[in-house]
Image (cartoon, rainbow, N blue to C red):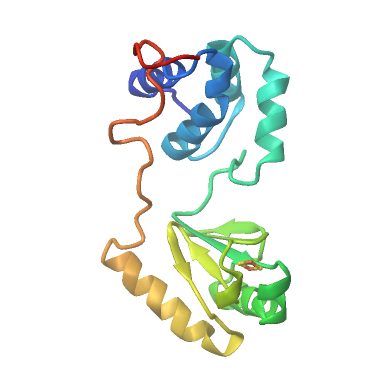
Length: 183
Ligand code: FES
């Protein structure tokens, strides 16, 4: 993994948005995840060094939050909700069927696909839910797995599954140098 000068510059900008640089930890980690795809030792040491904390603190966050990973994921990241509403609507069976059809066991990466079971995606009323990169698919079912695969392949071919960057635009947040900031 290579932390580029652009990534480092963005990290410096993020740290500038908080009264204490340590407070930028989560945003920096989201940035590294988005730009590098995963965390290796270099990335952990980089973030820790920037924030002035021990690497174990970054490692702790990395292993606690499921959106961060230590392994590269496939280009198409499929998250199948297995929490109650979705499980009752058949999401687990859907996930297993999908894994078999794509030849990619749940919890692993195979070719362009990564499939995971995840907890609630916050759309329980439309269970069962599956998120593919940034897109949410509602009301999926085991019987519809073939159609689902066709749909994601079509969306991928047209570029419509491309993840959107959270960082390639001007950042909001607090300007601590602004006279309006009272912190
Ligand atoms: S239980 Fe699946 S979205 Fe909430």
